[in-house]
Image (cartoon, rainbow, N blue to C red; front, side, top):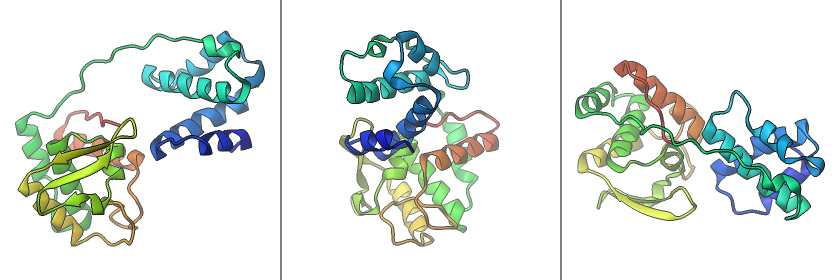
Length: 218
């Protein structure tokens, strides 16, 4: 990673997921362009990559302009670049039938099945995003009062409650969980922290069980 990019990321209180995203974007920026001499058109061309959807393009623009402003000052011409944010369709929610079908598809007597059942039940109860579920620490989950606290989008702490049944699913997962780390949900084989990218893949696999496309909340 470019030293300037590393210094920029290290000097801001970004969340871990934001750091991963910005690192990927900014590494490409400094490889493909000379940010010091970028024009408005250069930056728009950079962020409007075919493989990036509108949401990712908007994130890329914000990340690039934060970096450029930090590195070259508020008068840099590329800071005037703008792209249109497209309002997406409402995300598809599981109806009761599909939710019950999905919950019944997990085998709670295996490590992976117990973990996935706990994740799914907790997500249905709380609406937490993939990144928030991955960030959730065991010490911040109260199985006595069926409540939790977690850092959500925007870097703020938020509280949520879940059902006693979900609490039982979490307890079942804890009987399989083998790690000394802080995170509640981990890779069922290695014990390493479960990443948002990994959980996104898992959720898409759940969609195949139902025969529908599931779009995870990042």
